[in-house]
Length: 471
Image (cartoon, rainbow, N blue to C red; front, side):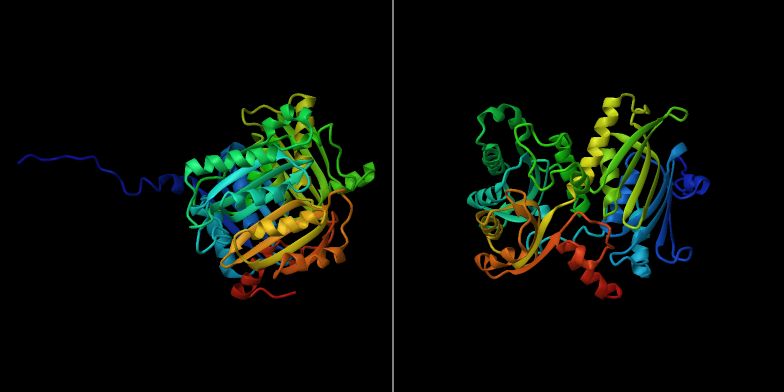
């Protein structure tokens, strides 16, 4: 009888690196050191994009980062964040703490909001996601909504941002009659039709220079089952960056006259100031950002630097009395610092644009109604017919309900009278309508009333399920 020999594998070999160097990622939650916030410490093996993943995970949990210290030299990643929950308190619920440790320690793409905005009847994974970029004009979002209805599409979810006369939009759609995914052949026809809508303009001389920015294609969202708020928002940042919204409005079209002086324009931009200096001794470029503080600010800036292929080696983030100060030590992905003044100027403009995009002026409308085919088209048509332009939109389907949040102003850029907004409610139909004025003053503390519809709904659910105290 022949003896068969096989190699021996020590079962402890796989855990050898961890026993030598420690765990790949260690997350520590400290609620004892400070009275007003929770300290989250992360020690991990470093890799490209890890800081953005951590900030994205904290943002998806609706945690506000008040301070942060980041260091990632020598292949090791060390972060310290001071965070607060939605109502500005420490994170004390043990179930939430356990989830933070699991989400940050797993190094996966799983996020707590992965199922927050999916329709039970038709998950977002069964829909087709398309993205649109182009030159914005009054009524364009209404035209897009009407075109999708005419093409037999059911709009499950849509998010749209406008900035410096550019539009970026990500929409999840399905077949109107069967609520089934749209096949690729029909999707191409839909994309061609929407491209025609985007390219409609009254100025023929602008066609050649702007057509390359009018584009409709399958959405470039990260692959996977989860569809989180920050993944969509990161894609909107990328889309607006791709159409160079940081360059300002085209010469042929002036900015809407809501702000006319340099002082007011600085206020519109949240008092934002970005400067870039060189640290020749260490080979870093130092990016300094000073602006009014707001939620998701760190996500916006880290997202922009990462998508521009810069690596953040060290960072310090602080906020006090409604004002934020951020400092990033960066290099190119190839290890080089920013060499030219032109490149520094471009990075500064891109960061200013990223901060501005989320700062919406005018009136915020929150509408909730039973979902039906053509609902979004009808709402935006009424807004357009009453001379209102949508500058930002977040629409989602939650079961049988459709929740909509719009930021609107009139087509001349003037402030909209709140009573006028309420007076058009009868034209919209049986819809729950909440109206609030939204300004660029972010010095006020974060409260539940300043959240989006989805965040407010999530806040109420978590308050009941996790025992959060109502304010």
